[in-house]
Each structure stands twice: as structure tokens, then as C-alpha cells.
Length: 143
Image 1 (cartoon, rainbow, N blue to C red):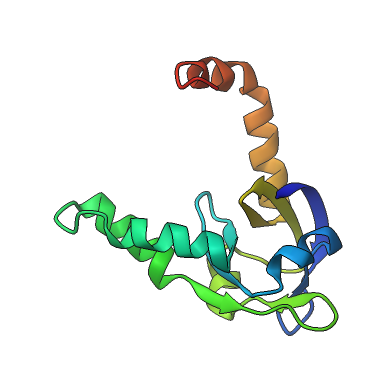
Image 2 (spheres, rainbow, N blue to C red):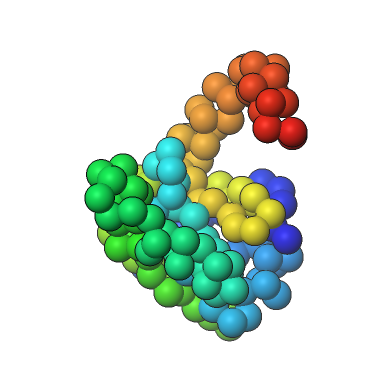
């Protein structure tokens, strides 16, 4: 289970240290892909095997379904954790999410997201200011 918020840096080669408590879940490798809101999403191989067929089965006749499947599937890349607990984030994904040096890793139960620190702080501040409205809307979903 991925939970929490962690600040890290990306080195000049594009390597990012994974929080130590997350590494055990990534021993079989992982998949990183373009996420929503200009971040990256990282899934364990097991979680990716559950998600990818759902994405591939979206109706190709629907433009939004095609676009979302392309975003997630074409944007995906296998990553491995090295002996020092780092993974290499491909250049095209660093560009997509505007990752420079300071990043935030946010645990979201079955995945974690990788954010540019400035974008994350702006997003978090905006979301926190609307938390009551968000909670009320989600109440209809049983949350």
C-alpha cells in the first residue's frame, strides 16, 4: 500500500530515489506512465496487469476513450529499481510532467504519483481550499 507524501530530487541523469518503504512493493518492477493533472503515475506490475486490459478494452469509437487509452498506454514505460533504490524516469515523461530537480512522491494506495514540487504545492493548496465541497460531492458516491 502506497500512502504519504515524500520530497525527493531527480539527479542529472533522470534517476529518482524511491521512498524506502515503497521499494519492497517494486521488487518485480513497475510501470510509470503519464498521469492526470500533469503528474506521472507509477504502478506495480501486478496493478498494471489489472489496469492495462481495462484501458485496452475502452470503446475505440469514442474519442475520449481513445485519447485516455493513448495517454496511459502509449505513455507507459517499464522501470526497474536499482541497487541504490532509484529508478530512471525517461526523458519524455520528465518533459510531460515538467520534472526538473525537486519532486514530490504521493502515495495513493495502489499507485503513487510523481509531481513537480511547485505544481504539487499549487494543486494541493487549491484542493485543500475546496475540501468541503469535494467531500460533499463524493458523499453521493458513498465515500
